[in-house]
Image (cartoon, rainbow, N blue to C red; front, side, top):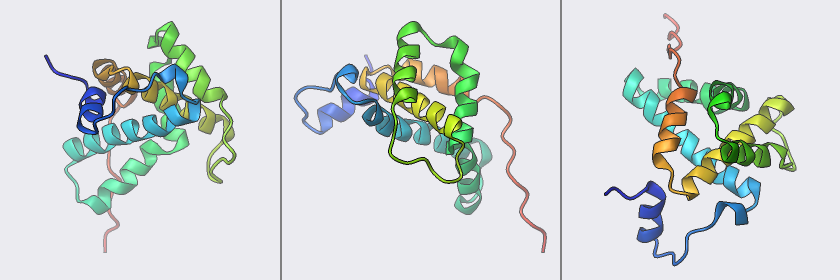
Length: 150
C-alpha cells in the first residue's frame, strides 16, 4: 500500500503528529497548497512541453499567477464535494495583507481559495483526489510561446 506524499514527508521529518487542516489558519493551508499547485504545473510542463528551462518558466508563470489559478478553479468548481467547497471558501474569504499589484483582487481571492483547498487535501493525504482535480484544472491545450526569430 502506497503512503501519501504527506505521510511520507511527515515520517521523513520525524514529526509526531500531522496537522489537522481545520486547526490551521486558511492562509497556512494556502501556503502549502501553493507549493502543491506549483509542483503539478512544473511537472506537467516539463513532461509535456520538453522545452529548455528559459522557455518553461514563462509558461509556468501563466499558470501559477492569480488569473491562471482562478481559471483552473473554474474548471473544477462544479466537481468539488461539500467539504472541499468549504475548504475553498475558507481560503477565498481569508484576507491577506497585500494583493500583488498585477493581480485582480477577485482572481487573487479565488486563487487563494484554490491553494487552501489543495493544502487541505494535502494535509489529509488525499493525493489521488489532488491528482484528479489537478488533471481537470490543468486539462487544456498548452502551447508554448514562439521564440522571436532573429
